[in-house]
Image (cartoon, rainbow, N blue to C red; front, side):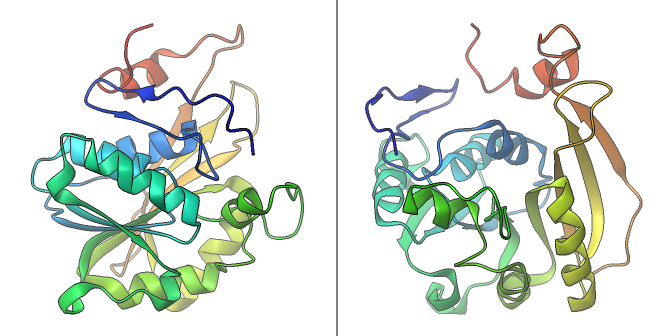
Length: 240
């Protein structure tokens, strides 16, 4: 893992370090943190928080949200905890160094929203660094375990929000639907026009499936960010 660049990443509402985390600030987490519906959400559980980017974005979007962020990797946990302490939302963000399968919320707490940028790849494209392998592969958190954890910690009427590669999302959806979680909203993410989607944001709940399909294109054919992308992030990224 390259830790040579120790500069913080600056957003309009906060800054954070990410050089010690297994996964850096990236488009997947940023889009998920901005896209996820947080109407009537007060208690959030972030599974595999990394450097803490998703909780920080959610806290920036709503002053009523409180977030428990669980992270297995020790370096990522320490960095997330530090980022939370130095943020304007410190009193509402709590980092926990734990395997999510062993995590016990205080007071038997349940959550309105469970959110995760989970391990992606099931058996291929394995990175050499062990930390990145834990972050990007399902060795330590299988999809069926993620679904089971979400159902265990979710309040009645709550939601699970995840970002997945498009191919793996089909496997995840089958597991989720068999467990009683149905799609409420989804956004297909395309790197460019005329390309296949490479990511999908999913919002799932126990209600019957709702057909809300969105398409999101990051860059145009010339490689510039689309108006759609700029509009999504303009209230969070600093102007360049």
